[in-house]
Amino acid sequence: DFQIHNALVAAGLAISTGTSVDKALAALEKLKGAPGRLDLVGTTAAGAPVYVDYAHKPDALENVLASVRPFTTSRVVVVFGCGGDRDRGKRPIMGEIASR
Image (spheres, rainbow, N blue to C red):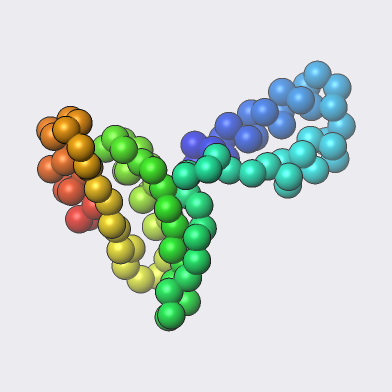
């Protein structure tokens, strides 16, 4: 939802400054996501989509899961890591988020 809201605000600003609605909507159709942000990288043998997202904070993981859940009729399988000697305190928080 966050990215959708950003795109709609951008289109609205463009339209309010004189860009035609058709041109603003055409520009939205050409948008590409940021690399590493909810990238569809393939499907499983059963046809389930496989995404990669470099969410490295609890709120980012929560947002990406909230984004994909409406598009599934089954469970969401989450594989994530918190490598290195970074903030170890967020690991249990992210594990709890992934388990929901």
